[in-house]
Length: 117
Image (cartoon, rainbow, N blue to C red; front, side, top):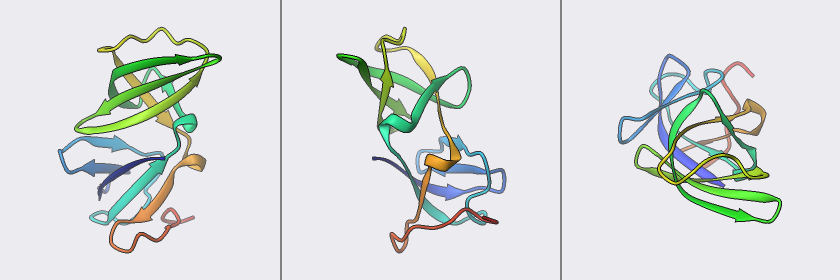
């Protein structure tokens, strides 16, 4: 699981410690709440918009490709089917469906439900 720790904003974003913001599909907690979001590598998708990332390592593994990415100062793993046209150093965009985004209280480590859910 990839984890990103930050503080929620009032614009449905998560602001990481390095200032990087991750746009979320919905407000997951009141603005100013410290949360950790998690997403499994197979639930992160390549796209034309979404979280800006840099591909660092590309590892073809049979029918899938593992991509190590850098989002701000954080590192994450992405698992995609097939052979995407991505090379180390490329700027790419990532997305995670809200149903696959896990939200935890950074303070307690307990799972949270999205605000209003």
